[in-house]
Length: 121
Ligand code: 5GP
Image 1: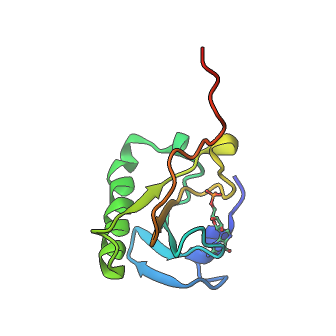
Image 2: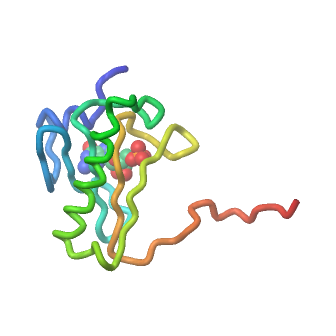
C-alpha cells in the first residue's frame, strides 16, 4: 500500500492544523469541513481501512475515540453532541486509505446519511 497524504501529515512533510498529538495518534482539522467543527483523528500507524484493523490494534482504535472526546470537551461540544464516524471503502465514502475518525459538531447533524427513499417491500 503506497503512502497516503495522512502519513505525510504525521511526518510533518505537509502542514495541517494540528489539534492533538501523542505517540499513537494525531488529530487535525479537516481541510474541507462538513460542519462548523470537523476534525480527523488518525492513528500514526497507517492502517488502510477498518477491514485491516487487527486484534492487536483494539486499544489503538479505542484511543482514537478517547482523543475525539478530549478535543470535543476542549471545544465545548461534548455535551451538545457530535458525530464520530469512520468511512470504509468506496460505498462508505472513504477517499483516504489510512483510517481516520471524522468528528463533526456545531450544528444538528442529519440522520440517516442514506436519504433516498427505501422502497416498501
Ligand atoms: P474520507 O473521505 O476518506 O472518509 O475522508 C477523508 C477526509 O480527509 C476528507 O474529509 C478530506 O476533506 C480530508 N482531507 C483530505 N486531504 C486532506 C489534507 O491534505 N489535509 C487535511 N487536513 N484534510 C484532508
